[in-house]
Length: 266
Ligand SMILES: [Zn+2]
Ligand SMILES: [Zn+2]
Ligand SMILES: [Zn+2]
Figure 1 (cartoon, rainbow, N blue to C red):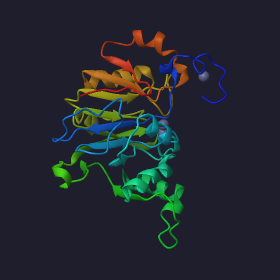
Figure 2 (figure 1 turned 90 degrees about the vertical axis):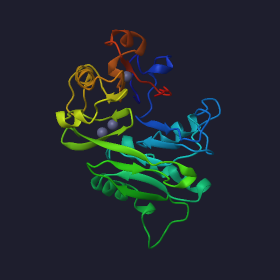
Figure 3 (figure 1 turned 120 degrees about the vertical axis):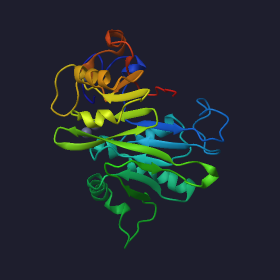
């Protein structure tokens, strides 16, 4: 946290360094023989798809750090700037691929994106070099993402999971055996049902104390217990959670703190 004198903010442990919450979901295509190439970056050629969940102000830093050469879609959970503030930087993908980037969001989130990036949606006076974004409307229904038909890749099915972030509706996403929920502080049982059978659950846990807009640790663990994924990773963690090295061993079995750069294979 900027200007925070606390020990966690000044920790030397890289697992205590947290950029804004985001995830890259790499879906391997049928034709890809190799992995996502941890050392060589997330390559552009071959089949498979790269889907990014949320593009906060650290999007550029994160895409550079993970060497993401190809971006097929961005899914937005909600309109808060820590989840949308990096969208201007899709310009690099526009430049190299000569096409807009596909962004999936609800109508309400789209309205915020159009407002925040008005210069990118001014079709009367298009500004040269402005980010090019194609907005796709999502709601409660499953949708598919991707380059159907291209290189024989099947589209990737995404199941939206509804939640509340205080009074603001927020969307989580299930992609195959992965579910990703951030900025939730409430989830209905009917939505938990949609998470049955996930292998990996990612869920937000801000800190130890109750909070009006985010699950705290106890509530996130409760959600994890209901979902019963093999592995649960906690994200959107604040400095108030404490040191990773001290807190991680205290978590129940199968539940872990996520950290920047963590890679999970399913
Ligand atoms: Zn701090
Ligand atoms: Zn938020
Ligand atoms: Zn947030």
